[in-house]
Image (cartoon, rainbow, N blue to C red; front, side):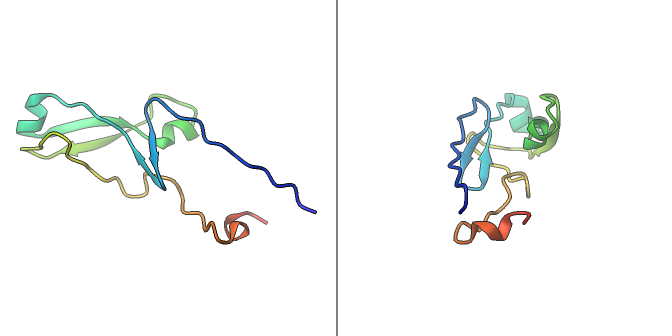
Length: 91
């Protein structure tokens, strides 16, 4: 038979998971919000490489409002077909 392992993902103080998406809070200054600029965001790549200083540069548009969001394509988790778990394994 098979060995079935149930995994539980522990919470992280920086990364918050919403399905396959990962959310982070990035505080910016009033000047960055009003005039635009850039901000460094820790990414999942930092966990994969075991380095806390690996960041992605995100452009803040001029006139950005509080609670605005910015999406980084492919910055979240890989899609796993939960209906067929073996489809995404390396068997």
